[in-house]
Length: 410
Image (cartoon, rainbow, N blue to C red; front, side, top):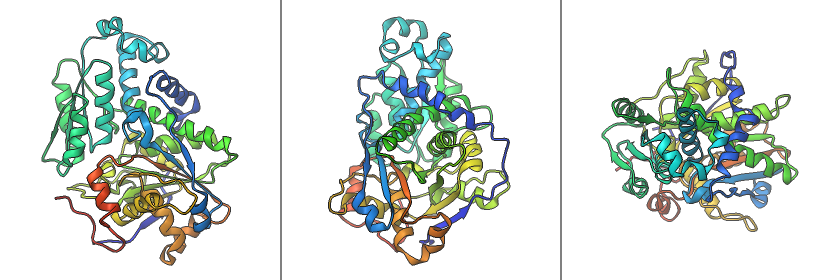
């Protein structure tokens, strides 16, 4: 089994780049205005890890900590809630600016829109976010989860009053299952954070919802006198990566940061597509067992892929130990730095940065990415301990330590 980090710079054949405009500051501003109308809204912290950046030989290192998002311990609710609101706006002939939270939960709007059932597939965080938003807005929700999903993740979704099951299918087949069910249900609506031909509007809204995270981070960096030189962002289907890279590519059009897409090696469809290099997407099939449950997606979002092929600088495929190392480094910080609770999918970018800056075998990657003492790096910890049992296994028991065999679900 492979235990090495794999990488490639972006030599992909470019497209006409038609999706990048959808991640403009103007579009993202609509989403953050909507999210600010929620009583649960608070800006998540951007933490500067000064001790660690000095240890690694970087100028500055920041992490956007999404474990505080809406009390749900992950960023995903940003996309699901915004997409549901946009769908309601579309069906009622309203602009999203007319539907703040207090209007969405009103009896008048409920009577006008009626009762819908929102379907989705998830490894955990996205489904929980959709279920949370649907429940707050008085709507129904059905969630399908892939085999190997932990009971804790299912229970988190069930607490939001959704119908939720674990199927004997991988993630991408669960997506297809949920889409069929939505199509065969009266007022059934698929809210999925990936796109395919004929299904791109709602995934685009989800990506724009993630723009709230990017806009917050941009302002927080600016307030600290920082203009990032590097951004490392996780990808499952690629929606978050497309949103963040799309936003910063628009923000710094003349001189964008160096931006890298980071995946779990068991589901590295973007990396494999980049290696192929002709612009087409390479799917990963099978069980895709990885400790990084939120990244175990083998088919890239068509909208985000178009952005990434044009604007990402590198694609990096990481074995499980990289993520586990990242969680442990966050949990045991350098003296003076703040401790961050970062789950399996949230910590992989920090594990990668640590490996690249400290291990001689990745010197070529370090040089290719131009990481040095002048680098100002932005990471996103996309989730906290969304599965506390698994988190303790990593932090307390050393699950997936460096050089260990890759993780296999029970």
